[in-house]
Structures are given as C-alpha cells and as structure tokens.
Length: 222
Image (cartoon, rainbow, N blue to C red; front, side, top):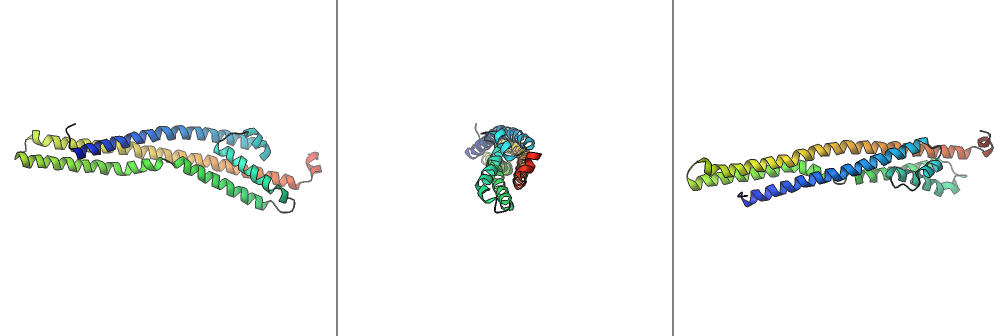
C-alpha cells in the first residue's frame, strides 16, 4: 500500500490483465465446449444421411456452424437446380466447396476472437513487471542516497516493490501463455471437425448429382 504510484499502477495493471485472462478462459471454454459438441452431433447426422435433403431434414433448424454447412449446400443446389439438366455438376460442386470454405473460415475467425489478448498478455506482462522491478530498485537507491545509509529498513521497501512487481508479471504471463496454447490446440481440433463435416456435405452433394443423372427407372428398380 505504501509503494510508489508508478509501481502501484504496474501492479494494478497486471492484476487486471490476470483477471482478463481468466475471464477469457471461462468464456472461450464454454463457447468451445458447446460448439464442439454441436459440431460432433451434426457430423453424425451428416455421416448417417444418404442425401443432402435427408441430412437437412435430420438437422432441422439447428444453428450450429456444421448445420450451416448443410443449409448452405442445400441452398446452392436448389439455386443451381434449373441448370443441372443442361450443365454438368462440376460448377455446382465448386460453388458448394467455395461456400463451405468461407463458412469454415468465418467460424475459425470467430472462435479465435479473444485469444489474441492472451498472446498479448503472455508476451508483455513479464516486461511490464520488469519495468515495475526497475522502478522499485531505483527507489531503493534513491532511499540509500537520501538516508546516507545502507540500512535494511531503508532498502527493504524499494526491493519489496520490485519483487512484488516481478511476481505479478509472472502471475499474469504464465497462465495466459498456457491457456493460449490450450485454446490453440482446441480450436485446431474444432476446425478439423468442421473440415470433416464439410467433406461429408460435399460427398452428399456429389451423390445427389450422380443420382440425378441416373434414370428414374433404374433408381426405382433398385
């Protein structure tokens, strides 16, 4: 409480950074957990479906990102349907693939939102703490010069400020780095689930286009 105003500002800033770190951890953990669970459920529905229409019916109005992949593909196929009898299906596949890729990229950007703050705190907090350390040591030397003595009672306050600022810098930085790395791995796994879902949707589109080219009598015979 008796520390220099600059050191106090450093300590308060580091404490606030630590609070932000744990807030981001809680919010992003809940968000990632919900999104990964929804993506896995949607992935199961896509794998079990025999057609894009069946997958869309199974998912209904679910708002997960993986469900949006199915909805986007269904919309693109419906828009392209009038031209399918005169043009091949390659154009449809390319357009579907393009839309799915943009949805995946947007979901990845949304999921990484907030993790940059963790990287910033993890990389800058030790140096902010070091600034407080240098300032505290400077105050200790100023106290020595003013008191004309190296008595521990004169040196101790400045040294205590310096050590506390260093400790708070590490307390803020270490969890931020660890949590950032955990989120990086979790988000990579989430993106892989979306990629698998997109591949499943593309297979359904390709299957529907192949069945469209087969005469109705052949399908009925099966």
